[in-house]
Every structure is written in structure tokens, then in C-alpha cells.
Image (cartoon, one colour):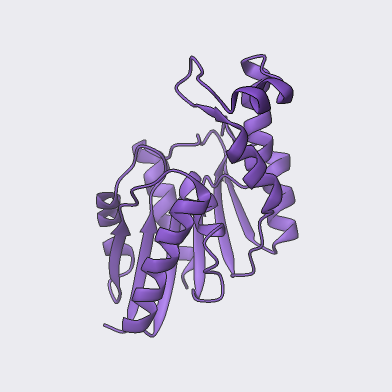
Length: 200
């Protein structure tokens, strides 16, 4: 085959989730990446390597990325190497998300800078290095992109996703009552329908 689809999972996910997308792209090889790291500067390199390798084998490459997988992909320097991206519940403003989590745990920037890393009760470490990286590397993304967003997404506000879509000329679809994690039968049916419509 001359076409490939690369799937980048979100936190807690795996490359095996790519199996879901194979029937949606019958004329393409669909592969998932099981990245081993958890920071945008490390995972971005893994994604860049995977895309470079696929581009050497295929004429056309499409990206599907979920949640933080989309954020990592936008830090991989790959937008000029892929034909189109499909983002599902993408994290598009990591600084806002980190600041929100600092607020939830009553952590100040001075405290985080002094300690470097602060453990939280909700299982997410706050990292000064991570926050500094995010601020020093604003998203630059020029690839044609379609976004699927749930109106009940608890990580990204509608205003945030709408602003991102406008700045990057992305096509935004909002699922009413949808969540950050698309997992119910109704949500997956809509996800499949969305991909079919946007891939025409």
C-alpha cells in the first residue's frame, strides 16, 4: 500500500487502539505508536522518528491523535510531513491545563520552581521543567486538521478549543454531551461517522 495512517494514543492508552481505525481506512496501512516517554521533548522525538520512517515507505501519511497524543504530535515537528490530522479531544493549551492543576492543588509558581516536582493527589506530577518547556515552545502547527471535541470535556474548555481551531484554521466538530474520553457506543459511532465525513 502507498498510504499509511499513524495513531498516537493518549495517556493510559496503547498502540492497539489503532485497530479501531483499520475499517475506516481500508486502503491504508494503519499503525499505532507505543511511545515510551512522557514529556513533549522526548515523546516528540519518538513521534518524529516514526513519521520519518513511515514517510520513507509511503507516499501519503495521515495522523490520528488522541488527547495528550495530539499535544505531543504538535511538538514533534511533523506537520509538513503529513497530509491531514484528525485530533480527538486534543490538549491544545498545556500551559492553561498545568496552571489549572496548580490552582486545584494550591501550588504557586514559586513553590513549583523551588521544589522542581510536586506530587499531587490526583496522580499527576507538577513539574517546573515541563511548565518552562511549554512556555518556551508555543504550538506551531500548519497541517490541515479536523478536531472532534466533547462539550463535557473536563480538560479543555470550549473557548480554548475554539480559539485554537480559529488560529490554526482547523475544522471543529462538537459532540453535545461528549466527554474527553470517547468510549461509549454512542460516542464511538459518532467518532466513526465524523472520520468518514472528514475523509471524503
